[in-house]
Length: 71
Image (cartoon, rainbow, N blue to C red; front, side, top):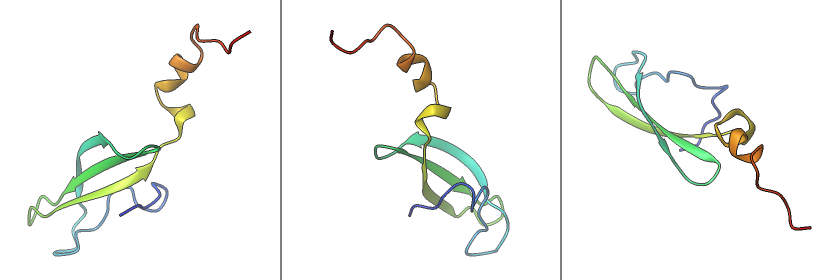
């Protein structure tokens, strides 16, 4: 399931409708990260893929490094 982060920050639990808490962020498919949410009331778990902006990650330090195109 892919949902933009602007739409869902902390989703509602589909079982009990309480807000779910973020428990884990893992790398996903290229350009995405997988966020795992858990409901503290009924303990349901949901995994949602969020798009990642490469300019807002630690990749910027790598891009600004010594790697240069061939001359």
